[in-house]
Length: 220
Image (cartoon, rainbow, N blue to C red; front, side):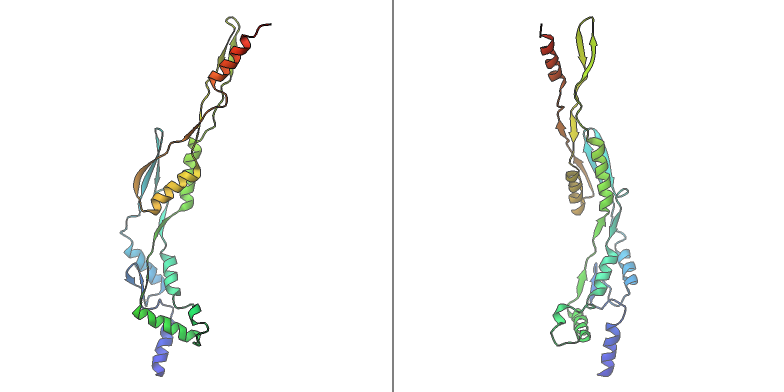
């Protein structure tokens, strides 16, 4: 009847989430978006969002943890999704001969028999993580240094040479993706060992001494 239609209209055009909608196993139907956000925040309050991953390279360690990489849950986004359900004129209603209102009534009443469930997920600040891993890479990465002539001793007619030092390289993409894989899989505590690739100097001390040896053996 008429009053039934008015009641439906009031429910359909309310600013509240439709009944039959669940987020993280909480029925949020009938709540405003702000109420639902507060409710879901409370439910997730006790979930421990802390993590501390250690990156170990050589004899140095770095802490990649939730103090440096903020953690949050996509609660607001999920509530928006739940609120929007049944409010859009879904493609199923177009061309079905129903008015948009009837379509919405149908979607809202279907929720009673087939509830919509949503699950929030924890996420972390990807930009902060990247800044941290890039900082580690920049600290570790170094170019190889060639051996050079240090001095020449006139009395003994000998050269001294500086030591060559190999370079070290870590791939920034690789370190970042190792960390995201761990965090995406819910790992909160582990040590990640990274072995930098060793890059030899183009001119080693042995090669340089060798080349000078050849010169000194040359007589006119």
